[in-house]
Length: 260
Ligand SMILES: C[S@@+](CC[C@H](N)C(=O)[O-])C[C@H]1O[C@@H](n2cnc3c(N)ncnc32)[C@H](O)[C@@H]1O
Image (cartoon, rainbow, N blue to C red; front, side):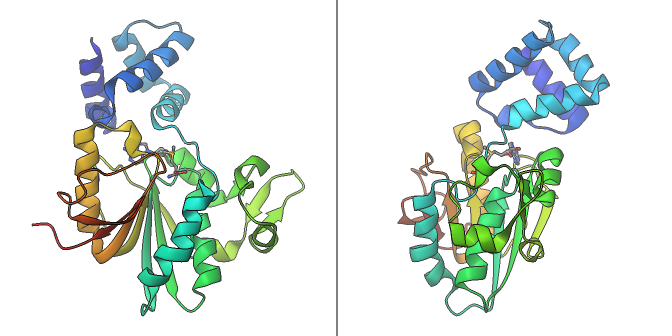
């Protein structure tokens, strides 16, 4: 069995579409995991993954890479808070956000903190999705190590976090009320619609160019006209016009019109 056949088998048996991921990086990560199990053959590895739940979960972790933190790239979150959101929220009583590939929840909770503080009169809802059920369970729990909250100001820390006896920080229940966590695979599942803001950061870097375009196009359809797509610090959509966007600022793209 070669790598191509392995990817096809994973899709057939588990519904995970590995063909959208950048091949070299993905193969390197998978082979390094095979090495740790002392396996060289993709067929054997596939069998091990299908038989052993723990191995399957470790495999998913390797493929997905769950690194995240609160207010990741704080200067860009400041831009969101100071320049993007005031205009975007203006005149709205309801506001719908999607945090796509939300990992451990640090991203949607950061967004909720901003909405609570800056727009207390607005009813906001955040849909937070990820492919990885385990990380979504952690996100729902909302308990974090200190290193993940280094960008949280002391005032916000006091207001929205509780230091537990374990030394971990748990997130305030009032933020949780606004967030719905659910599993969603960006490469396979249907996209919801009518969002004012979509935050999709640090996941598209793992996908091929073609897949990235497909995702951005789908996200364009998921936004309201005038809605904004917020991408990761190392991400830059060169062909944004073709995909139905205008550039608002670096990292922020605004939906011009419905794509045909
Ligand atoms: C590096 S984290 C980014 C977290 C957060 N957006 C941030 O910027 O801090 C990438 C996340 O993408 C998720 N992911 C990977 N492939 C995915 C897919 N096909 N569909 C949805 N989420 C995916 C992973 O499970 C992981 O939690």
